[in-house]
Amino acid sequence: MTGGRVPPWVAGGLRGVTRAELPREVMAGVTLAALAIPLNIGYAQIAGLPPVAGLYAAILPIALFALLCSSRQLVASPDAPIAALIGSLLVAIVAEPGSPRYVELAYAQALVCAVVFLLFAVLRLGFLADFLSEPVLVGFIAGLAIEILTSQVEKILGIRVTAEAFFSELWEIVTKIPDARIWSVAVGVATMVMIVVLRRTAPALPGPLIALVLVTAVVAAASLDERGAAILGPVPSGLPVPHWPEVSLGQWAALVPGAIAICAVTLADGLLTARRYAEQHGYRLDADQELRAFGIANIGGGLTQSITLGSSASRTAAMDATGSRSQIPSLVCAAVVAVLLAFFSGLLKYLPNAALAGIVAVAVVKLIDVHALRRLWRLRRSEFWIAAVCMLGVPVLGSLSAVVIAFLLSAVEVVRRASRPGTATLQPGPHGRFVRGQAQEAAPGLVVYRFEAELFFANCNTFATRVEELATDRVRWLVLDAEAVTDIDTTGAQTLAETTGKLADRGITFAITRATRPLRDLLDHYGLGGLRHFDSNEAALSAYLAAEAHR
Image 1 (cartoon, rainbow, N blue to C red):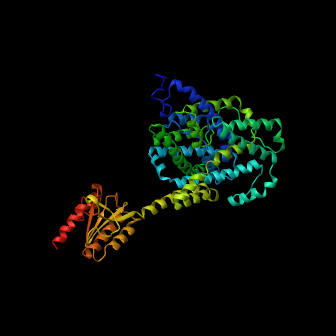
Image 2 (cartoon, rainbow, N blue to C red):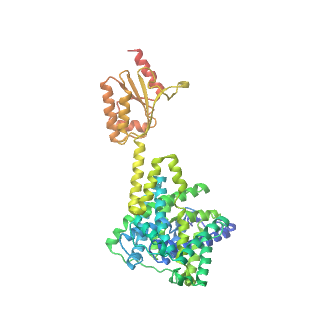
Image 3 (cartoon, rainbow, N blue to C red):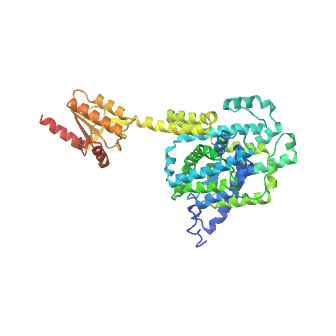
């Protein structure tokens, strides 16, 4: 490295690290690998894929993202929401998780997601992350967490549930509790307890890996796998090899809606997380470059038998807590996992399934943001109910339907708010400025009405109704304060023309104040250039008083 810095041709995520900081970055990478190994195996199982598909995601895909992204903190990896989406989406196409056809579709899913990510990048759609509201995101992620927790409870209990509907599945779990395998429960609960205790007493340590190693040693020493504590089984040795998914043309097409859903979740969760850390650490984030990096990383994943790559807010926070300020930990993680699979994969077969389920359960329970739900209930009940609908929609209706509902609810909420804009009548105040007041008239016969939103199809009836209420028999001038009116659509223009026409028929003069030049040009475009304009409410008042004096 020249001058202690990474070369300028390296991606932005690797810049800003000095030689002195490299040891810290490398140790953070070892920690990241310790987190990734058990979690990636668990998330692959959630998606209905072989454990190795999760581990492969921590080699080439994560390295490609690290080299191509602009974020210095965001960790790309399989995560709970993505794993749950893959599982629920592919089950709708192939009924049997883990079957050869199902696995091939999963690899193809990564490639279709890559295309969607790259299209988003080419079309510069990174800004769409701003349009998924917090209630929708909180509810959707919580719903995925509930769905995952349900499946992990089954693994910890060591039972098999056949019901497909969510509430039927819950009832079957409850009725089968007496059939639970005691040693499987003991392994799962012990794993969760150790992780929680280590998180509170020694947060710097990789709790999931430590718990997994200890529990695995106990299971092996006591032969608990022969007494109901099922183990992972053989994991293929060696590095991933290039592989093109054997999928029909119709199946490729069937994967597109799911890919859009996966990309939407990553777009919202990943980009918002990356933006938060970029602002916190004072560097520029290129959202479209992040999408491009996700796309290329998933090309690498789909061609090397990996689960689809998304983003992980929890691992990003863990890396930030270590003091890491670059993507070097992701590269180190890729190297560590590659060495594990090349030389030590035989050790993985002894991992207890219940322990892996416990690790995933502890990781995903944090996705149910109870604090955020309480805050929404306290601050705005309508947003709380949006979150609640999304949260229940995921396990009951399915992930794809829940994504569609989430976007529709967001759109409805935006339109609902815009349809009820802030309005006020203004009166002269101190120093001649107009202020909000209780009186309806600014002067005898003069009403100054402020409309605080763009005038469009959803609120034009509100505008017309309020103007009609204000235009009493004693009103001679009605002035619209248009400072906050940033746009008018064709429906709004038609309503404005009809409203001013009705006022003119009643002998009421209509005028507009404080309209911006773009708004005036827009009114001219709609054929409303003949309306009277004043630069200020004070000027309109002076003109009105002068007109009244000459009556």
